[in-house]
Image 1 (cartoon, one colour):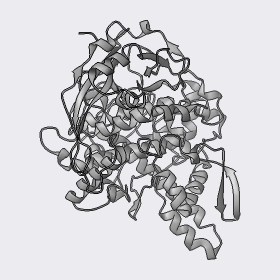
Image 2 (cartoon, rainbow, N blue to C red):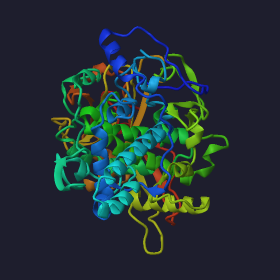
Image 3 (cartoon, rainbow, N blue to C red):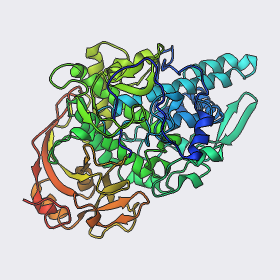
Image 4 (spheres, rainbow, N blue to C red):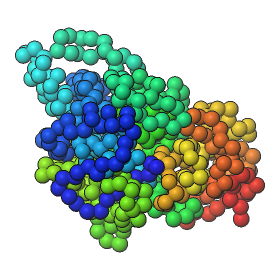
Length: 571
């Protein structure tokens, strides 16, 4: 059981409720529980500094980048049994399941703390990243203090300015895995001189065999791996799906309801223009493969933090654009009945809302943080970070800055002209996908391709995007997954005019879909009878100014493209 939810109610300090554990897990529990007398508080950092795009950090802020690498390297070297080690903090997200962090929660609950398929998906991950950031900077400062006295001030200042970088996988320049995360070694300036070291951004190397043995793996026995890994072909998969991902990221901001923007669980029906950030996020996990494709062990891969910093950044952009979202008809977190369970409170069903605790994260008074604590763009400022597109300012200035940045980075029609004017309108197309995530007992993706011949592998360039599930269902909750793949960029790259008659003629014998298992192999359609796929057209009205957002018209289904195909919608 791996879908997550939350416990309603606050308590100052949690205690573990014991349950029978396997003998090996008892040994692990003995080693890693109760290693700290105090709970680690989520305090963030004192100085307000920007989180930087990873390529810009490396090119334009080399000292900060250097200390980020050294801090990450030092953190990864901490003994794994310590509460604040890289291994233990990564394990908060999932594995080792049933082993609470700092004695918080219900031991033996076969899941982690992370929130997926939840209205709290975005808000839960924010304090998680803040915790990582404060521990990382502490280690960077520790290394800086070891430099010779004449150099120490320079490197200490750089260490204090370190913040988690992000990978903008939806903007030009972010089409592929950043080079810094895709090379095994890296040259850095250390307290004892320039050295080439094993790159801590490339992977995490496990220290203790007895700890590694508890990393759960679905298709692949991760316990056999001595270090994290990704697919050798993930860079190509990320590149081939970039255009659709960029369009979907832009379109997600058309929703004024945070619950729609946040997660797939409020997607009421398949023929809607709503796209959730969670589904865009899922596709990155699936395409990177390896550890990143499995919710229980994804956080052990260092690229997890780079990816989720981008997700948090997009949440900040949305919060800046819609500052009134915490009040009104569609409040920031709409109540949702989640029945899946969590390591924080066990298997009991609860109602998630804006006051739901975000286990296991606590403030300096040991009080559990709640979703409301992170309901605005400014909520990050008190923890010492902001994003370049959302600098601290007045509400009106933040709205404008975030909207202009959104149009500049993600508008599929291009940037504004010298007078701030944008192109006006066009007909756009997308493939909408839905399925029951509980029907297949493994993680998978429904991949969409454009080709007269089906793809020969999971990394065929004909695949333009897909909808992936990132956590398994247990049949007790909301199990319908909704996703969308933008077709318009692929149509344009094939020189297709966007009138419906031309599009239908082109797609009828070229548009297809397939099911990819967690191991990258094809799954037969009869294993996913709940699959539904439809093609829709919407007229999109783009504003004339770059500080306004587009308006998406009512979608019109085009059954001629999907009728007669397995899972395809018909009239």
